[in-house]
Length: 444
Image 1 (cartoon, rainbow, N blue to C red):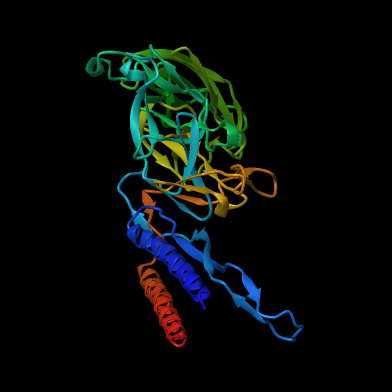
Image 2: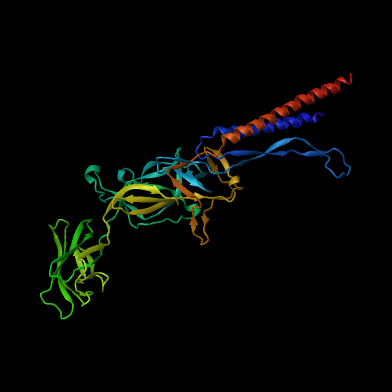
C-alpha cells in the first residue's frame, strides 16, 4: 500500500515539471522568435504481481517521470518592422551569430548595426557590422568586389574634410555562399561608390528621309572623368549624289554637355541604297575626352535608314555608367545584401547565411533565443538543390520579425489539465494515508 505514496509523489513531481514548461511558454508569448516546448512523460517501471502465465498483463506501474522536453518549431507570426536590418525566416533554418569565437544559432532577427573603422582614425573607412541586440555578430558571406581607396573623392570632400571611400570593382547580381566553416562577419561600408564606366559604344537609329534638310541625332556619352558629354551627328544631303540611292554628309562632334569644350570633330559620309538601307558609313570611332567611342549606324534596315514617305525620326543608345554614391542597402528574400546607388545601379556585396541541422531537436537551448550545436543535432550545414548549388532553404523577410509560437489558449488548457493531475496525485497521498491509518486501527 505504501507504494501508492511514491507513485503519487512521482506524479506530483512530474506534473510540477510540466507546469514549469507551460509557465515558461506563457511567459515568452511576446518573445521574438521564441520556440515553445512540450513536456513528454513516461512511466518509471512496472512490477508483475504474479509469475503465472496469463493471457493478460499482470503488471502494476510504479510512477511517472518527465522524459523529455521537445521543441515546437512551428512558424511564428510575422510582425512588420521599420528597419530593413530586422529579418525573419519563413521556413526551416537558423541565423548564425558569433562572439569571442563561439557560434550560436537563433531565429530572432532583431538585428542592428555597430560602426567599425577598418583603418583606425580614418572615419571614411567605417563599416556597419550586422549585430544582435547583445552585440553578437551575424555571419554570412562577403564578396571581395569592393575595396577601400583612401584617395577616392566621394564628392563631398568640402563638407567631409577628407577623401576616401570603398569603391565597387565588380558589380554582382547574386552571391554564392562559401563553405559553412568559412562564414564571417557581415560588414556594410558606409561610403561605397559605383565607379564610372566610360562609354565605348553608341548606336544610332532613325530615318533621315530624302528631303534636303539638315538632320541631327545626338547621344550622351560618359567620359572617364565622369562627365556626361554629347556625341552629335549632323546629316546634310551630299552635293554629289550616287546614280542609285542617296548620300548624306556627316559631321560628328564630341563636346561637353554645354558645348563649351570640343573633344573631337570628324567629317564623313553615309550612303544608302535605292531602297533606303544603309550601305556604308566611314566614321567608326570618336574621341570622348581620351576614351574611344565606337559609332554604330547599324546595317541594312536595322539602324539609320533613308526612306521616303516614312516619318523622320532619330534616337540613340549608349553603354557606360556615371559614377554613383551609395543611397541605401537592402536584403532580398535569399538573404543577398544589395547596395543601391545614385546612378540607378545595384550590386550585391554579401549574403546572410541560413544554417540547417540534421536534427533540430538535438540543439542545446542556451537562453536568449540562442541555441548551440550538440552531438545530437549534428554540425550546421547548408542545403543545396538538385544541381548541387547552395540554397537558403528558407525565405528571408526583411522589415519583419518572427513572433513567438507559444499559443496562449493551448497553454491555458494544458495548465488546467496539469493542475488537475497535480491535485489528483495530491489526493492519492491523502487517500493512501487514510487507508494506512484504517489498516493500523484494525490491529488495535
